[in-house]
Length: 391
Image 1 (cartoon, rainbow, N blue to C red):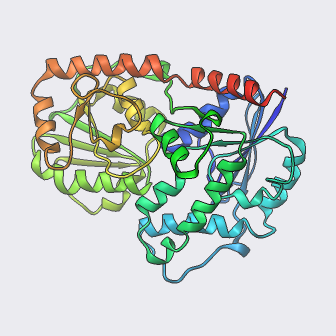
Image 2 (image 1 turned 90 degrees about the vertical axis):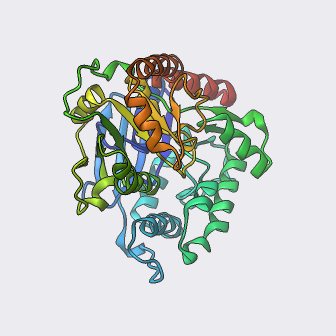
Image 3 (image 1 turned 30 degrees about the vertical axis):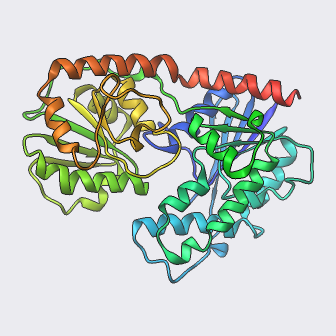
Protein backbone atom coordinates (compact mmCIF):
# COMPACT_ATOMS: atom_id res chain seq x y z
CA UNK A 1 0.00 0.00 0.00
CA UNK A 2 1.44 3.37 -1.04
CA UNK A 3 2.16 5.99 1.61
CA UNK A 4 0.97 9.60 1.32
CA UNK A 5 2.43 12.43 3.41
CA UNK A 6 0.12 15.46 3.72
CA UNK A 7 1.54 18.89 4.65
CA UNK A 8 -0.83 21.37 6.28
CA UNK A 9 -0.66 24.51 8.41
CA UNK A 10 -3.64 23.63 10.62
CA UNK A 11 -4.59 20.39 12.42
CA UNK A 12 -7.63 18.16 12.19
CA UNK A 13 -10.51 18.43 14.62
CA UNK A 14 -12.66 15.41 15.40
CA UNK A 15 -15.47 15.39 14.87
CA UNK A 16 -14.96 18.25 12.42
CA UNK A 17 -17.59 20.97 12.73
CA UNK A 18 -16.99 23.53 10.00
CA UNK A 19 -14.57 25.01 7.51
CA UNK A 20 -11.39 23.42 6.25
CA UNK A 21 -11.30 20.81 9.02
CA UNK A 22 -14.28 19.06 7.38
CA UNK A 23 -12.42 18.69 4.10
CA UNK A 24 -9.10 17.92 5.76
CA UNK A 25 -10.43 15.07 7.88
CA UNK A 26 -13.07 13.51 5.65
CA UNK A 27 -11.11 13.35 2.38
CA UNK A 28 -8.09 11.69 3.95
CA UNK A 29 -10.20 9.43 6.12
CA UNK A 30 -11.82 8.12 2.92
CA UNK A 31 -8.51 7.97 1.03
CA UNK A 32 -7.08 5.81 3.84
CA UNK A 33 -9.10 2.96 2.28
CA UNK A 34 -6.60 3.08 -0.59
CA UNK A 35 -3.38 4.46 0.95
CA UNK A 36 -1.51 4.78 4.22
CA UNK A 37 -2.10 8.43 5.13
CA UNK A 38 0.10 10.56 7.40
CA UNK A 39 -0.94 14.12 8.14
CA UNK A 40 1.78 16.51 9.26
CA UNK A 41 0.03 19.46 10.86
CA UNK A 42 0.72 22.41 13.12
CA UNK A 43 -0.90 23.43 16.38
CA UNK A 44 -0.59 26.53 18.53
CA UNK A 45 -1.92 24.73 21.60
CA UNK A 46 -0.22 22.16 23.78
CA UNK A 47 -1.88 19.30 21.96
CA UNK A 48 1.07 18.01 20.00
CA UNK A 49 1.89 14.37 19.45
CA UNK A 50 1.03 11.40 17.29
CA UNK A 51 -2.68 10.63 16.89
CA UNK A 52 -4.09 7.48 15.25
CA UNK A 53 -7.28 8.50 13.44
CA UNK A 54 -7.99 5.19 11.67
CA UNK A 55 -6.46 1.91 10.55
CA UNK A 56 -4.27 3.53 7.86
CA UNK A 57 -4.71 7.10 9.04
CA UNK A 58 -2.52 9.03 11.50
CA UNK A 59 -1.57 12.59 12.26
CA UNK A 60 1.52 14.22 13.73
CA UNK A 61 0.46 17.49 15.34
CA UNK A 62 3.57 19.62 15.75
CA UNK A 63 3.50 22.53 18.18
CA UNK A 64 4.80 25.66 16.47
CA UNK A 65 8.38 26.40 17.48
CA UNK A 66 8.18 29.76 19.28
CA UNK A 67 11.86 30.43 18.54
CA UNK A 68 10.94 31.16 14.94
CA UNK A 69 7.67 33.00 15.38
CA UNK A 70 7.69 35.97 13.03
CA UNK A 71 6.86 39.26 14.71
CA UNK A 72 5.64 42.37 12.91
CA UNK A 73 4.80 45.26 15.22
CA UNK A 74 2.79 46.99 12.48
CA UNK A 75 0.15 44.24 12.58
CA UNK A 76 -2.41 45.05 15.25
CA UNK A 77 -4.41 42.39 17.14
CA UNK A 78 -7.74 42.50 15.30
CA UNK A 79 -9.13 39.32 13.81
CA UNK A 80 -8.36 39.92 10.15
CA UNK A 81 -4.80 41.01 10.82
CA UNK A 82 -4.14 38.11 13.21
CA UNK A 83 -5.26 35.80 10.40
CA UNK A 84 -2.90 37.49 7.95
CA UNK A 85 -0.09 37.48 10.51
CA UNK A 86 -0.47 33.74 11.15
CA UNK A 87 -0.15 32.84 7.47
CA UNK A 88 2.89 35.10 7.05
CA UNK A 89 4.38 33.50 10.13
CA UNK A 90 3.98 30.08 8.49
CA UNK A 91 5.90 31.25 5.43
CA UNK A 92 8.68 32.79 7.52
CA UNK A 93 9.06 29.83 9.87
CA UNK A 94 9.40 27.41 6.97
CA UNK A 95 12.82 28.90 6.18
CA UNK A 96 14.29 27.74 9.53
CA UNK A 97 15.25 24.37 11.08
CA UNK A 98 12.11 24.05 13.19
CA UNK A 99 10.64 20.97 14.86
CA UNK A 100 8.23 20.77 11.91
CA UNK A 101 11.12 20.63 9.42
CA UNK A 102 12.73 17.85 11.45
CA UNK A 103 9.58 15.74 11.20
CA UNK A 104 9.11 16.55 7.52
CA UNK A 105 12.64 15.43 6.64
CA UNK A 106 12.14 12.18 8.51
CA UNK A 107 8.69 11.39 7.11
CA UNK A 108 9.62 12.49 3.57
CA UNK A 109 11.97 9.53 3.27
CA UNK A 110 9.27 7.07 4.37
CA UNK A 111 6.48 8.16 2.00
CA UNK A 112 5.84 7.71 -1.71
CA UNK A 113 3.87 10.89 -2.46
CA UNK A 114 3.88 14.35 -0.85
CA UNK A 115 0.64 16.34 -0.79
CA UNK A 116 0.51 20.07 -0.04
CA UNK A 117 -2.77 21.55 1.20
CA UNK A 118 -1.60 25.14 0.60
CA UNK A 119 1.56 27.03 -0.41
CA UNK A 120 2.22 28.46 3.07
CA UNK A 121 4.54 25.65 4.21
CA UNK A 122 6.06 24.96 0.80
CA UNK A 123 9.60 25.94 1.79
CA UNK A 124 9.77 23.02 4.21
CA UNK A 125 9.76 20.83 1.10
CA UNK A 126 13.38 21.53 0.24
CA UNK A 127 13.45 18.57 -2.15
CA UNK A 128 10.82 20.03 -4.47
CA UNK A 129 12.28 20.36 -7.95
CA UNK A 130 15.32 18.28 -6.98
CA UNK A 131 13.83 14.78 -6.80
CA UNK A 132 11.45 12.52 -8.68
CA UNK A 133 8.96 11.97 -5.87
CA UNK A 134 5.43 12.94 -7.02
CA UNK A 135 3.75 16.04 -5.55
CA UNK A 136 0.05 16.81 -5.35
CA UNK A 137 -1.50 20.18 -4.58
CA UNK A 138 -4.87 19.48 -2.95
CA UNK A 139 -6.08 23.06 -2.81
CA UNK A 140 -8.87 24.28 -0.54
CA UNK A 141 -8.78 27.68 -2.23
CA UNK A 142 -6.83 29.66 -4.79
CA UNK A 143 -4.72 31.03 -1.94
CA UNK A 144 -3.13 33.99 -3.70
CA UNK A 145 -6.45 35.20 -5.06
CA UNK A 146 -8.06 34.79 -1.63
CA UNK A 147 -5.25 36.65 0.14
CA UNK A 148 -5.32 39.47 -2.42
CA UNK A 149 -9.06 39.76 -1.88
CA UNK A 150 -9.01 39.65 1.93
CA UNK A 151 -5.72 40.92 3.36
CA UNK A 152 -6.11 44.45 4.64
CA UNK A 153 -2.99 45.38 6.58
CA UNK A 154 -0.49 47.32 4.44
CA UNK A 155 2.46 45.51 5.95
CA UNK A 156 0.84 42.12 5.33
CA UNK A 157 0.00 42.99 1.72
CA UNK A 158 3.72 43.42 1.04
CA UNK A 159 3.90 39.63 1.28
CA UNK A 160 1.34 39.04 -1.49
CA UNK A 161 4.03 38.70 -4.20
CA UNK A 162 5.65 35.99 -2.07
CA UNK A 163 2.33 34.14 -1.74
CA UNK A 164 1.97 34.36 -5.52
CA UNK A 165 5.51 33.08 -6.04
CA UNK A 166 5.00 30.13 -3.67
CA UNK A 167 1.68 29.09 -5.17
CA UNK A 168 3.06 29.43 -8.70
CA UNK A 169 6.02 27.24 -7.75
CA UNK A 170 3.73 24.64 -6.19
CA UNK A 171 1.42 24.52 -9.21
CA UNK A 172 4.34 24.28 -11.64
CA UNK A 173 6.01 21.37 -9.81
CA UNK A 174 2.87 19.48 -8.77
CA UNK A 175 2.12 16.40 -10.86
CA UNK A 176 -1.56 16.73 -9.99
CA UNK A 177 -3.60 19.71 -8.79
CA UNK A 178 -7.00 19.12 -7.20
CA UNK A 179 -9.40 22.08 -7.09
CA UNK A 180 -12.85 22.49 -5.56
CA UNK A 181 -14.68 23.88 -8.62
CA UNK A 182 -14.47 24.56 -12.35
CA UNK A 183 -14.10 28.28 -11.61
CA UNK A 184 -11.03 27.58 -9.47
CA UNK A 185 -9.58 25.43 -12.25
CA UNK A 186 -10.00 28.22 -14.78
CA UNK A 187 -8.44 30.75 -12.41
CA UNK A 188 -5.39 28.56 -11.85
CA UNK A 189 -4.94 27.99 -15.58
CA UNK A 190 -5.23 31.64 -16.55
CA UNK A 191 -3.12 33.00 -13.67
CA UNK A 192 -0.24 30.53 -13.80
CA UNK A 193 -0.49 29.42 -17.46
CA UNK A 194 -0.93 25.78 -16.46
CA UNK A 195 -1.65 22.69 -18.51
CA UNK A 196 -5.37 21.96 -17.95
CA UNK A 197 -4.71 18.22 -18.02
CA UNK A 198 -2.93 18.30 -14.64
CA UNK A 199 -5.88 19.98 -12.86
CA UNK A 200 -8.78 17.86 -11.62
CA UNK A 201 -11.93 18.43 -9.58
CA UNK A 202 -12.08 17.31 -5.94
CA UNK A 203 -15.02 19.30 -4.59
CA UNK A 204 -16.05 19.63 -0.98
CA UNK A 205 -18.53 17.04 0.16
CA UNK A 206 -20.99 15.77 2.74
CA UNK A 207 -22.06 12.68 4.69
CA UNK A 208 -25.80 12.63 4.25
CA UNK A 209 -26.15 9.64 6.58
CA UNK A 210 -25.34 11.69 9.67
CA UNK A 211 -28.33 14.07 9.54
CA UNK A 212 -31.19 13.74 12.01
CA UNK A 213 -34.62 13.77 10.29
CA UNK A 214 -36.01 17.28 10.43
CA UNK A 215 -38.82 17.64 12.95
CA UNK A 216 -41.35 20.18 14.08
CA UNK A 217 -40.47 23.74 15.06
CA UNK A 218 -39.27 23.98 18.66
CA UNK A 219 -39.06 27.76 18.93
CA UNK A 220 -41.60 30.51 19.54
CA UNK A 221 -40.40 32.49 16.51
CA UNK A 222 -39.26 31.35 13.06
CA UNK A 223 -35.55 30.57 13.30
CA UNK A 224 -32.65 31.33 10.95
CA UNK A 225 -29.27 29.64 11.44
CA UNK A 226 -25.73 30.64 10.54
CA UNK A 227 -22.71 28.60 11.60
CA UNK A 228 -19.01 29.28 11.11
CA UNK A 229 -15.52 29.34 12.57
CA UNK A 230 -13.62 32.55 13.33
CA UNK A 231 -12.39 32.62 9.72
CA UNK A 232 -12.71 36.31 8.74
CA UNK A 233 -15.41 35.92 6.03
CA UNK A 234 -17.54 34.06 8.59
CA UNK A 235 -17.09 36.85 11.13
CA UNK A 236 -18.06 39.41 8.50
CA UNK A 237 -21.25 37.43 7.81
CA UNK A 238 -22.03 37.04 11.52
CA UNK A 239 -21.56 40.78 12.03
CA UNK A 240 -24.02 41.49 9.22
CA UNK A 241 -26.60 39.19 10.81
CA UNK A 242 -26.22 40.59 14.32
CA UNK A 243 -25.95 44.26 13.44
CA UNK A 244 -28.20 44.50 10.39
CA UNK A 245 -30.55 41.59 9.68
CA UNK A 246 -31.65 41.22 13.31
CA UNK A 247 -32.89 44.82 13.28
CA UNK A 248 -34.75 44.43 9.98
CA UNK A 249 -36.38 41.09 10.89
CA UNK A 250 -37.59 41.49 14.50
CA UNK A 251 -39.99 38.54 14.22
CA UNK A 252 -37.20 36.10 13.36
CA UNK A 253 -34.88 34.48 15.91
CA UNK A 254 -31.32 34.43 14.57
CA UNK A 255 -29.05 31.66 15.85
CA UNK A 256 -25.33 32.15 15.25
CA UNK A 257 -23.14 29.17 16.17
CA UNK A 258 -19.40 28.65 16.14
CA UNK A 259 -16.45 30.83 17.04
CA UNK A 260 -17.47 33.46 14.48
CA UNK A 261 -19.91 34.87 17.06
CA UNK A 262 -17.45 35.30 19.94
CA UNK A 263 -16.67 38.85 18.80
CA UNK A 264 -20.28 39.95 19.40
CA UNK A 265 -20.97 38.42 22.82
CA UNK A 266 -21.51 41.87 24.35
CA UNK A 267 -24.30 42.53 21.86
CA UNK A 268 -27.67 41.99 23.51
CA UNK A 269 -30.68 41.58 21.22
CA UNK A 270 -33.90 39.77 22.00
CA UNK A 271 -33.94 37.98 18.66
CA UNK A 272 -30.27 36.93 18.51
CA UNK A 273 -28.85 33.82 20.17
CA UNK A 274 -25.05 33.49 20.13
CA UNK A 275 -23.93 29.92 20.84
CA UNK A 276 -20.15 30.17 20.35
CA UNK A 277 -18.45 26.82 19.67
CA UNK A 278 -20.84 23.87 19.62
CA UNK A 279 -20.44 20.10 19.65
CA UNK A 280 -21.17 17.90 16.69
CA UNK A 281 -24.34 16.61 18.41
CA UNK A 282 -25.54 20.16 19.02
CA UNK A 283 -24.92 20.99 15.38
CA UNK A 284 -26.97 18.00 14.21
CA UNK A 285 -29.84 18.98 16.51
CA UNK A 286 -29.80 22.57 15.23
CA UNK A 287 -29.87 21.36 11.63
CA UNK A 288 -32.92 19.24 12.43
CA UNK A 289 -34.95 21.99 14.12
CA UNK A 290 -34.31 25.43 12.56
CA UNK A 291 -36.63 26.82 9.88
CA UNK A 292 -34.10 28.26 7.44
CA UNK A 293 -30.35 28.60 6.99
CA UNK A 294 -28.47 31.75 6.02
CA UNK A 295 -25.16 32.21 4.26
CA UNK A 296 -24.58 35.96 3.83
CA UNK A 297 -20.91 35.65 2.90
CA UNK A 298 -19.33 38.38 0.79
CA UNK A 299 -15.72 37.20 0.46
CA UNK A 300 -14.05 33.83 0.06
CA UNK A 301 -12.61 31.30 -2.37
CA UNK A 302 -13.13 27.62 -3.12
CA UNK A 303 -16.58 26.24 -2.34
CA UNK A 304 -18.48 26.76 0.89
CA UNK A 305 -18.93 23.71 3.10
CA UNK A 306 -21.75 25.16 5.18
CA UNK A 307 -23.83 25.58 2.01
CA UNK A 308 -23.36 21.89 1.21
CA UNK A 309 -24.30 20.84 4.72
CA UNK A 310 -27.34 23.12 5.04
CA UNK A 311 -28.76 21.83 1.77
CA UNK A 312 -27.84 18.19 2.37
CA UNK A 313 -29.66 18.31 5.70
CA UNK A 314 -32.80 19.62 3.95
CA UNK A 315 -32.81 23.17 5.33
CA UNK A 316 -34.21 25.92 3.06
CA UNK A 317 -31.27 28.22 2.31
CA UNK A 318 -30.90 31.93 1.55
CA UNK A 319 -27.41 32.82 0.32
CA UNK A 320 -25.36 35.38 -1.54
CA UNK A 321 -23.64 34.43 -4.80
CA UNK A 322 -20.39 34.15 -2.85
CA UNK A 323 -21.95 31.66 -0.45
CA UNK A 324 -22.92 29.24 -3.24
CA UNK A 325 -19.87 29.80 -5.47
CA UNK A 326 -18.71 26.86 -7.55
CA UNK A 327 -21.71 24.60 -6.86
CA UNK A 328 -23.89 25.31 -9.93
CA UNK A 329 -27.00 25.88 -7.79
CA UNK A 330 -30.10 27.37 -9.38
CA UNK A 331 -31.82 30.32 -7.70
CA UNK A 332 -35.38 29.56 -6.55
CA UNK A 333 -34.92 25.87 -7.35
CA UNK A 334 -32.16 24.80 -4.95
CA UNK A 335 -31.93 27.93 -2.78
CA UNK A 336 -32.95 31.60 -2.65
CA UNK A 337 -30.43 34.17 -3.82
CA UNK A 338 -30.06 37.42 -1.86
CA UNK A 339 -27.54 40.21 -1.44
CA UNK A 340 -27.17 42.93 1.20
CA UNK A 341 -29.85 45.19 -0.21
CA UNK A 342 -32.62 42.56 -0.19
CA UNK A 343 -31.50 39.86 2.26
CA UNK A 344 -33.97 40.86 4.98
CA UNK A 345 -36.89 40.87 2.53
CA UNK A 346 -35.94 37.43 1.23
CA UNK A 347 -35.92 36.09 4.81
CA UNK A 348 -39.39 37.42 5.53
CA UNK A 349 -40.73 36.18 2.18
CA UNK A 350 -39.37 32.65 2.61
CA UNK A 351 -40.59 32.24 6.17
CA UNK A 352 -44.09 33.28 5.12
CA UNK A 353 -44.23 30.77 2.24
CA UNK A 354 -43.83 27.31 3.76
CA UNK A 355 -44.84 25.47 0.60
CA UNK A 356 -42.09 27.16 -1.42
CA UNK A 357 -39.56 26.62 1.40
CA UNK A 358 -40.33 22.89 1.43
CA UNK A 359 -40.01 22.71 -2.33
CA UNK A 360 -36.57 24.33 -2.61
CA UNK A 361 -35.26 22.39 0.39
CA UNK A 362 -36.26 19.11 -1.30
CA UNK A 363 -34.65 19.97 -4.65
CA UNK A 364 -31.56 21.41 -2.97
CA UNK A 365 -31.16 18.30 -0.83
CA UNK A 366 -31.56 15.94 -3.78
CA UNK A 367 -29.02 17.84 -5.87
CA UNK A 368 -26.32 18.00 -3.18
CA UNK A 369 -26.72 14.43 -1.97
CA UNK A 370 -26.47 13.05 -5.51
CA UNK A 371 -23.34 15.04 -6.45
CA UNK A 372 -21.20 15.65 -3.36
CA UNK A 373 -20.41 12.49 -1.39
CA UNK A 374 -17.00 12.43 0.37
CA UNK A 375 -16.71 8.74 -0.44
CA UNK A 376 -17.27 9.25 -4.16
CA UNK A 377 -14.94 12.26 -4.22
CA UNK A 378 -12.15 10.22 -2.60
CA UNK A 379 -12.74 7.33 -5.00
CA UNK A 380 -12.41 9.72 -7.95
CA UNK A 381 -9.19 11.18 -6.49
CA UNK A 382 -7.76 7.68 -6.05
CA UNK A 383 -8.45 6.78 -9.68
CA UNK A 384 -6.82 10.02 -10.89
CA UNK A 385 -3.76 9.53 -8.70
CA UNK A 386 -3.29 5.95 -9.86
CA UNK A 387 -3.82 6.85 -13.51
CA UNK A 388 -1.65 9.97 -13.62
CA UNK A 389 1.23 8.81 -11.44
CA UNK A 390 1.25 5.11 -12.40
CA UNK A 391 3.52 4.25 -9.53
